[in-house]
Amino acid sequence: MHEPLEQDRHEPAETNGGEPSARNRLRYIILGLLWAHPMSGYDIKQAFDRAIASYWNAGNSQIYTTLKSLSQAGLVESEVIVQTARPNRKVYRLTEAGLTELEQWLEEEVPDRFTKDEFLTKLFFCGETSDEIALHHLQHHRESLLQQLAYMERVKQQYASRPTRRPRLLEYQMLVREYKEAVLKAGLEVTERAIERLNDQTPKRP
Image 1 (cartoon, helix red, strand yellow):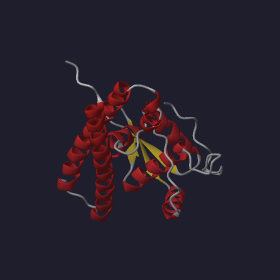
Image 2 (image 1 turned 180 degrees about the horizontal axis):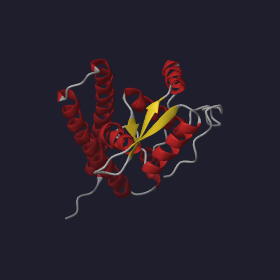
Image 3 (image 1 turned 30 degrees about the vertical axis):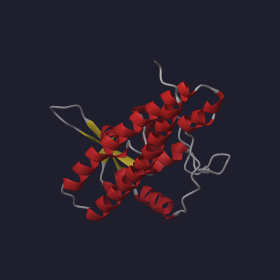
Image 4 (image 1 turned 45 degrees about the vertical axis):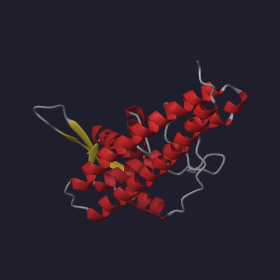
């Protein structure tokens, strides 16, 4: 899904319900990535796919729209790196204003987390339909959880074994992965119990 254009930095970073909007959270994720080191738009997308996809996803159009907004707001600056054997690269880096904004965001209280979950919303109403439909959703959800856990395990092994010049940063990145893995495992446990219960209730065909 494509998100609307990024808000101007002087506009409130909230929706009507008081919760920071998704587009503003993407803004701070990109600032955080550029805080580590300068990156191109392609590098940022690779970082999302490699390290952040388990808890946040962003498409190319969202990333480049946000980079444009951050540049216009003076929070990042860019430089074109001329290359002979490859296309030129446009590399972005944090400005002092961007660092200040990121630090202010990191110091803010985390808002209450009320997320939208289509799977749970459908499951909520499955009592109005057949157990077969509910079982289908549960089995599909189980497969998704197993895939995410496999991905988390691969990422954890890669990050735990690679050398780093920022051990403290890596420590907190690994903590995020441990947290997400625990959440996924808890969800898988509940899903497995629900599937088993429905299978026990479903009459066996002769």
